[in-house]
Image (cartoon, rainbow, N blue to C red; front, side, top):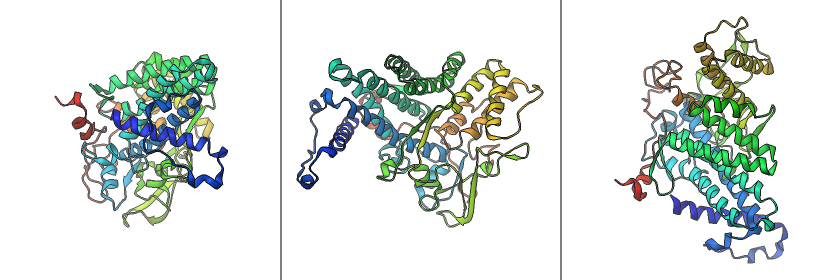
Length: 442
């Protein structure tokens, strides 16, 4: 994986460089340009390229994030499969195993290419941080900001690898648990946060705090999650930009799943249709249908009315609302029910639906369960959150059943078309990694 990441990094960095200088080219001689097939590693050790190298980290992360969000949404109970394509059906019925090339060796322009793209983004963040750190301060005006950016985006790539995969290998190994990767992500967020504060870039500070709060909630460091989530300011939102210039840049939920003109390989699950609170429609989960069939020519295609409606729609990475829900859960799980209730009621008031637990009579267990329900609604189709909640609460009193399990939309283990569900609860470390990584072969 490390060598593959290096090759992808060099190609991506030089493409970004070519784009950055295009405005200064003589377009009449553009076809005379000869781009090299291989880029010497030392060519990237140029302080004048620091900004371009930083942008390449963002670009590769955004590509990988769009694929990660789409793949994990389809694995979760937000969708039912509705495709004539075997790969799409396997994802929609949780039958993704370690030999599946769709997530392991595909690029992020392919449906659910996740593993390689996330590692490329992670590797670039590490490699470029090392390069920029070695550049003379005087030759890189925004050096601290650049370093903060690559550290924080690298932390988010690690977060996705930690939450999405059952176990992990970084570069040459050794084998790492989810917890190991989460702790590494926490370290990267901590380093990035310090640099962002030094550079005085509020946007990056908030992005680091939101990421570290999410990781600390995963690790059940509730005090740390509360401290970080409390620091994310009202109105904050961070997007991965999308457009239609290339399939690498598409909103993959639209392109593969939801947009009637492009996707239709899945349909919004019944439990996300006509979502209400005390009889009032909840505008956070707005879905619709034209009663036309999806790609399988059998299942009625339901799709979101106001999310992932075009291939150019930005993909939310994190937000103030997500941070508030982290704060609510961590507070509830440590006995501060008043804070959790307040946050739930503020979220309800923001969308015009009735309040929650006006008499403050709900127990701690009930409040935690309500926070999970609020996450289901507020974070609909966002950030791999629902897939992570399936895993985090599996086997607890607050279990969020996977599709095909008792208590789910298909409790008998068979979907609406008669296809049996598989047992994917997290993505396995791909076979190609085990075969090709010298430290994982026994």
